Image (cartoon, rainbow, N blue to C red; front, side, top):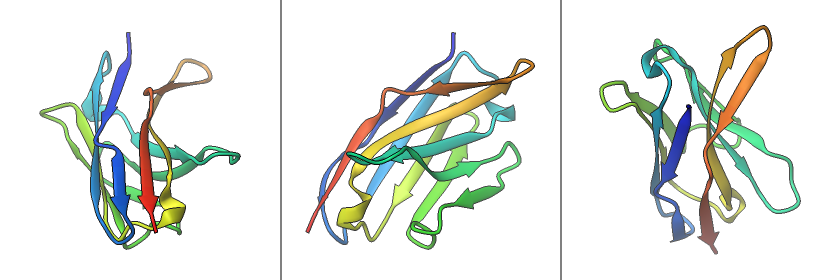
Length: 118
């Protein structure tokens, strides 16, 4: 079965950096688009960034220039490097992938908490 396991969250001061990792299993990782989403208390889950199988990337406007998504197909792992963190980046961050089975099936990790103090 598909398993996504995030790590790397924590507490950091504004202006600091964190790197999140997501180890995937149960999928042909190299052909899957991988994404990072986040959900702050009382808000809807939102896309942060995603990276396609060929390495193409897309970012939310709020993180452009500060966050970088990357992937290591040899390790079945996707990363999110987060720099210049702001208090508004505080959220639970989720790793995501999906597959088509006549409809989209989404897979999610358990989430990792990122807290940015001012």
